[in-house]
Picture (cartoon, rainbow, N blue to C red):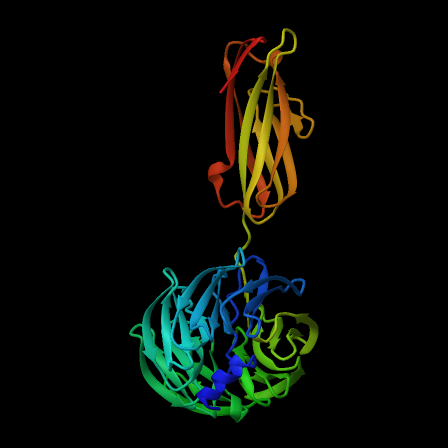
Length: 457
């Protein structure tokens, strides 16, 4: 296919040459939420899928004809390559909003983040180049010429090399990331559309679209050591965490090939949706997800049984998919305490009001705030639990940005007159994690000269 034909088919609302999905993010010790992101080339958007429910939770407008999507290793950012805009969109995963747009080379077709989060590599299909982006400043710091019509980029796990699938040159270019120079090229099969690097950085797999095969490249010698048959017109390849299995999305077959990389044979063929363009794995490898461009869906595959267990409708023309774990959600609970004197001849008292505010970003599922009282005094409360020397207040399911109040009262008659006393309220437990201890405590000091004269500060 000529370059002119590529541009015309995209402009007509069809599909341009498409790219590999992002490799899945590293496994985390806890169990943070896992989301899938599809680049919808005809809708100019990214669909956000909660993999726990297989429901689309957000749709994010991005640039024109997004053709690739990748998730940063720390799960805080998603990047799209916008083929017709010559831009990369930067999405904040906490808010699902575009926070920046980066101008790159002509017709970016694929993006990939370095393992240390510091750099983003965008391959420019018409520009025959790779734009190197500083992720801290979202600026292009280098442009690396590569072979004709690069469609995909991958970065070695150690970050020392980047590899591009140069489709019109039928080769893979090898980039030294320290110098941003091409140090070698490897002839592969016909029209490579996707590349991926093994977990130990020893092997690169290139999916040859018109060769119906994977080329296996030894990274030490830059030579092809074998060729593995796949389904018809593989557009994307990804690997399991241990590198033992490769998965290819086969466009013409509407299938995913499951390949044993040790024996270099297909062990299963999974029928998926129409126009299977891209495949990605969950962080624990238990699920594979395919972007089915013509069907406008994502197929969810149980990798234990190699069967489709769910189908999710997304935006128009999903051509790429990335799956990864987001950071564990935080909920910052701010504690404020007010003390209001209520003088009385026989029943002077101080009314306390706790104002508890969730500063987000996540919903506060539960929390406990404990107010310590002077000595062994006991308060009364309509919505907390008083005991000798303290008051315990609880709350549940407080959305970000919302506040609740809790109340308790200390009678002056029980206090030592003429001496100051202090009440301190402290967040003692909460879920999810509170990232800001600075606002977890509030204190008020009162002095009662008599039950008719009470001052609080």
